[in-house]
Image (cartoon, rainbow, N blue to C red; front, side, top):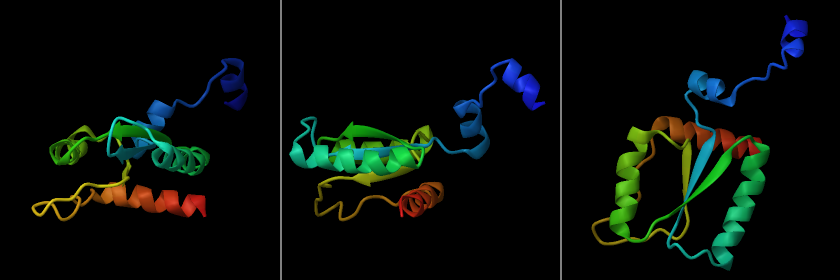
Length: 118
């Protein structure tokens, strides 16, 4: 079987692995504005170094304001396009004391990413 796969230049499809595992191998980073400053650039570089080695892609989402942040978390479980979310400089308000809890699968993925980086 391996000889036939090699003869046909077969390679494993990442998309097929995503469908089978239910993971996207994508991590979201929420940043507080559309402007990438030094601090945010350092966060991106550090996360990318760790996540890339663990097989994950980092996607940066500029989130301006509380309404945009809340909308992101409301849509995330439906779209299922990230296994975990990092938040840089979260904005808080009296009515929004914490970020909504992640789905169980996101928490597991973040835990696995952390273990893979150690």
